[in-house]
Length: 357
Image (cartoon, rainbow, N blue to C red; front, side):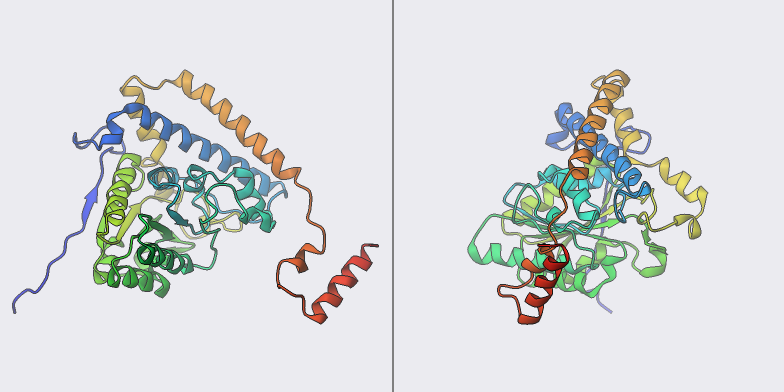
């Protein structure tokens, strides 16, 4: 039978796990090594914050928290490529991307601490808030992309989902809409190998997750998600295509979740120590640090000073979170309805009475 179509999924990597370049055609932003230093510093800030957040939860000062340990290159790379007017639709652990867009660490802590005011975050007010329902944020982003196209605005919508979430119908629907309408939409699939306790090979038969975009007619690529040069280069390419009217992309970022799924999880129940140990050999910090030191643009002394600054910033944000005053009891009623139903108004009055007001 004749072949009517063939497809290939390319793999993008610039920096190997040993910190050495695997190709010499570096993208323009990486030719200025200072850009890489700034990205490395941001990655280190994210990891410092993440460590503090886990400690807060373990001491009863924060609710369930989803660590981003191991994802720093992917998250920071995604956020650094976007412009202010673009729209970001995260899932629930892409703090590095959000920090690049102006969200404050204290607002992340407020969200996980059960304070909805964390969703009223700093940075672009048109970005979407955290999304725990798996995959629904992708449809939101596709809708935003459709609005951009209808208005003739040179803006791009970027959505993040995990390897497990890539198998949800919401994700496929967003991809199909982006292809059918040639939308400025980028579906980032952050493949950290585990959908809570379900391994990647048990939840899909696809050879790659990037290929899930082929049926929608999108541009697809698989990227080393622990190589921030490759992450940023892939995002720059996809954003340029989208902004110039050439349609959407699906980018699979291959990384690894070095932490438990959340602080409510114990990953030792379903994955072995050897697997995690091997993943630490490929994590994003070591390779970039090795490269920067080899280029003589970073040093252990500079890193020690920056770690002190990261800890200072993290402590400042933690204190701001801990010192945030609790909302008054009526807040649970005042932001649900334009006009309170009579029975809810009665409950509000009772709540105020119980507080002696």
